[in-house]
Image 1: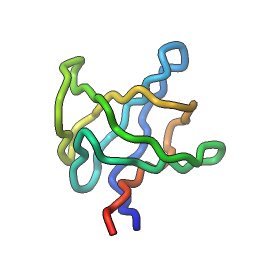
Image 2: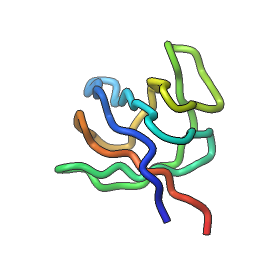
Image 3: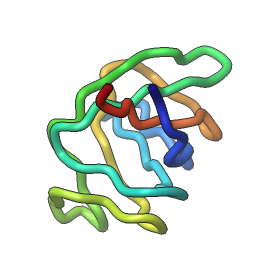
Image 4: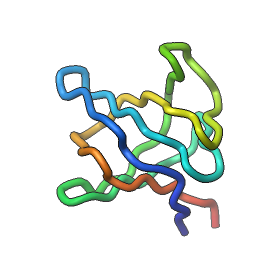
Length: 85
């Protein structure tokens, strides 16, 4: 099961980092996200993230969080949190 928690606001292609706006809920290290967009559709475990270039364990609603991505994403791609069964 999944829950929509945010969207991609920007992607830095050279360093493969996405800026994701958390619009609902929160995101923690160790959780898994599903990125879905026009060309993106993949799951990724969250191993690290930053807010304002400072490493954080948790991102809350309203945060803009930087996450190193396993694959390219695009602006406005949707970000879902995979919920435990």
